[in-house]
Image (spheres, rainbow, N blue to C red):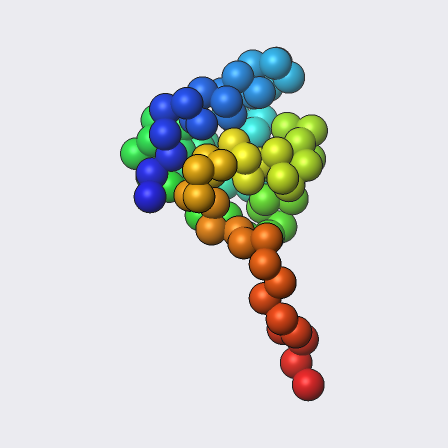
Amino acid sequence: MTMSKERVEKVIERIRELDLTNKEVADSVPIDERSLYRWLSRQREPKVTFLQAANLCSKLNWTIQELADAFYSSEGENPLSTESPGNLAPN
């Protein structure tokens, strides 16, 4: 699945709203600036750890839900289910 142009524009718009450079965003995640460029140019789908997602949310002043909404549409493309996955804790 690749990000749609509209979702990429939502992320770019947020970066501009906060007057951030791509380097500032990339450094906060942390990823290299080229990886961020590939995400924003839709060459590559973002793959981040929980910590990287948290760092990105912090830098963009977004909740995790706002970040997810920027990367996934509401038309069933979101892989995050609202159904409970059950008890995932180890016994």
